[in-house]
Image (cartoon, rainbow over all chains, first blue to last red; front, side):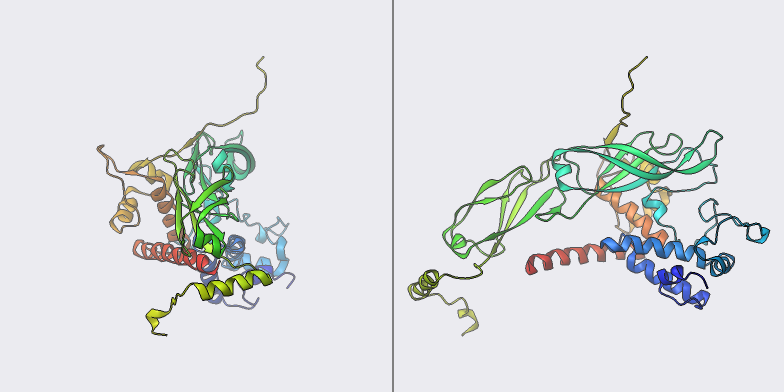
Length: 297
Length: 101
């Protein structure tokens, strides 16, 4: 045994049975499918499991892997090992089984053995919120099948200069006409990278806005960030924890502009000065209020 | 000779797709899309035209359904449940993130 990386990708031992491998793969696929699991490592784990399963599910490929390790599919003089490389052939899938190479969807790979010329290609791009607010240009590097001069389909790395339109929303699709395979279109699903300040819901933005207890009690103007710059926000006197304040039209600049919501979050200073403490003690005496009266305590 | 300029492909935002366009978009059949509608996974917008039209959230959802069905061996009822549960889970995670912030 020269290499066990593919077994590790599925979390099984090298002497696992074919059924164990299938079960392990199905479990990994459920857990790490990028549509189910949004953590950054999920995508890589799902792909690794798919690639491992693609080799280990096939007894001949598995035997070659056990013998030659990572270089199992390189051409060898032995005619018995003259298999087609994993990604060159249009191999048949059992429809009832889980398809291990889902990533061909995300990266737009689909093989028709050269029979289908015009093909749309799909890809997903994670953009920064700022790019959607202002518009941006981005160069994408995509692996996609292309027709060569002889009419054969080969995988090629392509750079695509993408103009991200201002006001694009997550889940929207961009169509790059004629940029797919053989004159098909390239379709790009837009997703947003997580943002440290703003949370995106449709066209609206939410920002968790910390306020001091006295700002919440007294109300008044405080500064808050928006994607296009700082603004003054007027908060009402007696503002509540979790209270939502809407800034109309300050969300994503789509055709129908989204709103920006500030969700107030009351925060105490890490340490009170002696004077502040004295003032609080005075306040406690001055303002009779029992928020627990309804509990009868 | 024309001055060489950097090639910039035309970019359109997809506003809606018709039933036949969504069928091509998901590399599937019209029957499959109709079943997604029957199970409430996606819904067309009301149109006066002869064909259904689908908006971007539904387009993204249909594609997600296609990927999950293919990759996890689900049927339409299964994928409808999975997508609903994922939505619920995400909504709860957002609420929890607000509480824990």
